[in-house]
Length: 381
Picture 1: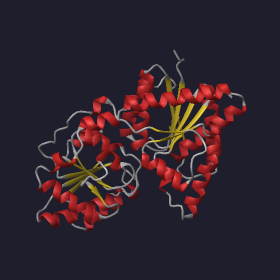
Picture 2 (picture 1 turned 90 degrees about the vertical axis):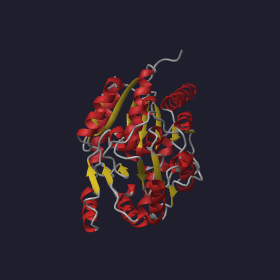
Picture 3 (picture 1 turned 45 degrees about the horizontal axis):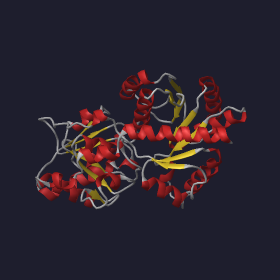
Picture 4 (picture 1 turned 180 degrees about the vertical axis):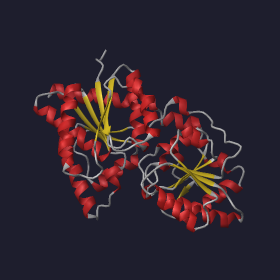
């Protein structure tokens, strides 16, 4: 039997899908007998994220290390790298697994520094979209993609969370020059339960970060257009936190929607699902968003932009997919969803189909197998 591993997951911001991904991986890996820890940013997150840390802490025998990790590359990164190196060295990990651009940078640089001292450690990276969202034509995109290419020399394994992410990486950065694996995001068994809507539910709900990349402004615009399509007032909620919250609130007030679209802070996702049958995901860019998988497992109706790997979950030809960035197309689907009683049954994949492909247990098993393969390879060389 293979010896248990000491695994440290590195990422920047403890919010959103990356944090969800790491929590699920950590829990499943801990249950399988491995020692797991987290290294992430201390500048982001609030009370909601503190509760999520409390949930996962029992599975983190290597603890939670929080240091200031800024979104943009800055001079303060040198201090963060040195503090991180000292902490990581003391934890003696077998695996450093970076998630997102900044987490991937940390894991690979720190792992390589340990390698210089002849310390055996596997260096892995999962992009989760991140740097892949940048345009190849922009100066920032050129810089970021060039850095990703350079970092391949310090990478033992790249994990793609959907086929879309693999294709995007190859088109923007190039064919990987290191070991790769495609391992779908997975959700835990407890997520597969129907969540009934409350008696005071609204017609539509947006759940997620309040920033332009996720499309809250498109949600507001599409909601107004949906009202005009159906010819009556509707109701909606935006649930989440983020840097652009005030901007969206002002947008709603200016359009006279302040009384029909409410705003609530981030909450546990199943509490949010109880607010509506219809979950709208209007993102401008994604990899494989957890909110889609969670909503389908909860037997909700998902209306989403055709971006990232969402079509891999809903089906390539799903009528629930709207043209990315097109509020008119989104409104068309939203109107159909609340006016045709059998539309959900005809369009949504059932929870068993989702379970067979997007399981946290399978995600963790395949990831652990990749760790062992890499460590065995490094022993031989």
